[in-house]
Length: 464
Image (spheres, helix red, strand yellow):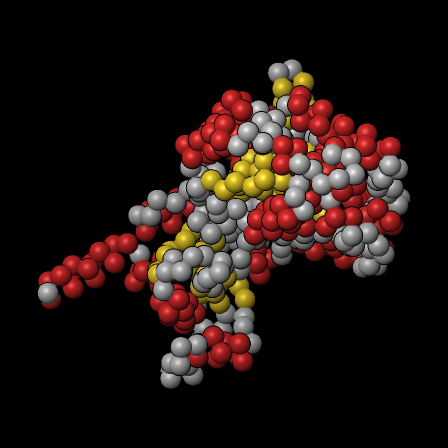
């Protein structure tokens, strides 16, 4: 990716000449205590990650949606949560709780400012190093450790990457709006997360990028765009190309075809950016995410992630080269102008990363659950994210109320999150679930599963 390294170096040189190159200056805190305690199997705290209660008013309102009259019926005291993103069940882990409490007692809650002012500490730096190590890249006989930048949320991380990308065009056009030939071409999967879409729209409005959307996971369409768009548009540059995609899509639960993307990257030399929000800590032997699962860590240029899903905490991060980190922290507005993560949150993330490394059994449990759910339902699923499409909004709300009465918190997903008539029940599996939880869930889901649909269709056909 020599051409991109040269572009970023030129942008950094421009920032340096304008005295606009920024860096974090960590405030020193005492080092974290000894590594937290870990366990060989689930404990009672794991149930706290999936057992919840709704207050009476919320419960009645949910049941009453659609005007049903039987909303006063007796309900289970507890609901089993199947709609969260706490895949590893770490949000309730004793080590994560203790780390947050200890840091809060010693340092308080408020981070005091943005990362570039006074909100960045040696705790933040330690977590960045741990995340960079998690996403390490091995090249022949050496290991290249990428750098990392902590952000307040995964949404802000994606926004920061997109605005920094766009800034390459504006910085190199020196004091004027970049001409179309100077803009970066961004190719985005049609089902990418809203934070990616919003970031692209922002820099597109600023006339820094030209955006193209390829059909979901359709590598033939992407190949066509990469090959032909610039042949048809002589005013576009053929060098500044970026492909950005989710690694594991949050609504459909399918993986981006990373091996095929890598082949296209080698063919066209584009910068490959992935949002590994739902893959980090869940996929791969070490929890390195979808790139580790597919064995292509070496070919991902920028990896965005979140700490609010499998890490069970809060925040976002960007794993990238040091040159990209310097550019993002100097031009990524959602990073620059946001208050830094509080120290107790960062301390809990540090503990969560340690627990994830030691309690590998949690990843094994997740994937056993995936296989078990698939065996019970005959659905072809590839991840802990499962979409049961039911069609209309009315059907989705009715299905959601049925699941609620059955003792499960499964939120119906409706437009604008998904297109019209593709409303669904989005189900997520966690290491904190039991096999019995999953068996009872599948029993409750049976009216909307394919075999049941086929059975109902046969009955209707017989009546006709």
